Length: 529
Image 1 (cartoon, rainbow, N blue to C red):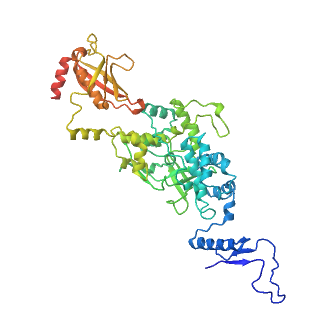
Image 2 (cartoon, one colour):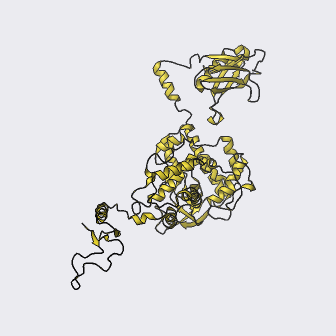
Image 3 (cartoon, rainbow, N blue to C red):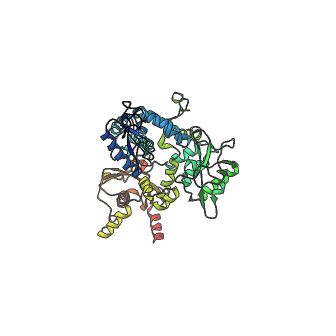
């Protein structure tokens, strides 16, 4: 086995001429030096026992390929980040700014003075606890991942293991539900964009494209015959401000269904704003051998240049959010050399259009597996965890199946209720042949307060309290209440329909009620029969 211990002070045999046993280095430095192990730097010791122990350990580690030179681990974290780690990182411009700010302010400011070999679980726990006093757990998780990546790059040359890999130190992920635009918000934000930029919103909400994919999209990516969009590339900006192409996230292409409305919007946009052919470097796998790709971009700046996401977000997206009343107007007191002035609204970034696309698809009944493929997710389970709250039918079919097995029909006769405000027989609501009213059901615990309204701005015509049940059963109970009071209504209940108001409205349910005068009601009933 390679490796041996050299005595730097004494010879094994007397000098052939002088007979001296002492070497010229006698008394200088440490006596014993371990050397001769391939790939392992020599190490000196005062005591022979220490040298023998280290030799045995180094030989074992060398044979396993896990030897770590202690001297290499003595570099300070701040120096290692600046000189070794960061020069080898290549990220988009916007990502670079965010990473550097967080690493410098929250990693190096606390741990930068420590040698990377001495950073252990105790340091990490104290550091995480300090960050949690002023930052949200989700932000601390991101910063923790940055440190973990830095230390992981030092394994196994400088440290034997990454202390960030120890379970229980990283803050738990908060349960944050993806947010989507409501229809009014969607319309207002789109209206707030200039005509040149509106197609980006259409591709986000209408096809679930990420922002880089939108700016890298080409008219040739439209497959009209198959009614699909082929997502082939994304456009990014590096830390030096230079644009480049790369594969979509996950390094894979995908196909997304193309609606007729989006197809029309793409055609009209290409007619009004001429697509521009550009040649840019290609980075990462999947590109041409030349290292450059020429593509005709659907969206460019008004000067025909590739779009810088950071600038576009500041000049186009934030004003559109302000137009919709989702953030405040630009304020010079918030401005800085980084072009501030707008409120920070991470949850309202362009990615919310992608969440809105998922919301629309799931509420239309599309499957999680299909949506996962269209969004480019590797795991349908991630899609389910991310967007399950957008599924309005979740649990309803299961509850109905249980009722069927038990032989119980909760819709028959409705649920128990209490009349809070009786219908006034003096107010005949049917004028002419038909009338349209609304049932507003507001939950509080397991109880629902259901009001009959002409319009949201008018007082209720009557009100009941339903003790339990979900929205469909509650509205059905209210319909039974109305049918039992036909005389007070002055007509017959023709239809009660659950209009499925989104959960952003506080969990309320809204029912549409169609009433008909007695003669008209008989006629409609006969038609239905």
